[in-house]
Length: 192
Ligand SMILES: [Zn+2]
Image (tube, rainbow, N blue to C red; front, side, top):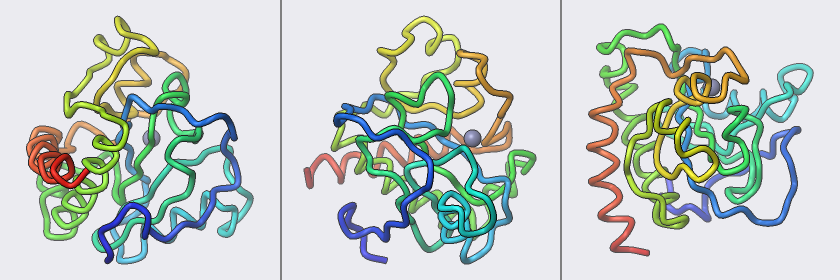
């Protein structure tokens, strides 16, 4: 695929909030609760668009699988992905399930997907000047809407208690992902 933010395929979600451009501060990592298949990103974008049934009252900025990224909401607008953090958060969906064990996030499919995701998130961090710092629920709770960094839906749920989602799950290799992201961020920063 063409690794340029402006060249990503775009299929607009049905439900999101149009507003004045927001300077985003948080990247929120999700998983789809959908299998790791070659077309999972395309499927998820169709789901948000209401093409796989009634449109859900949910959306994310982008869906990622092992070989593609589909953007669903403009980066500086508000998607409905993590109540409490929607205003300043960019939501990124990944193929797979929150119940996956660490090894299931380290197979060739997941490795390719997390590579692609790290490229995307590094580009977004460069665009919005977001540092590659992980924020857990306690840091989110203390910093509130001024929190700036990388987090997960599970941490947002625990901080704001406005949903019950715990994705991407305990097996998600966040340490490896952040190391990859830090590497990609150097390149993204150099190209910015
Ligand atoms: Zn989620």
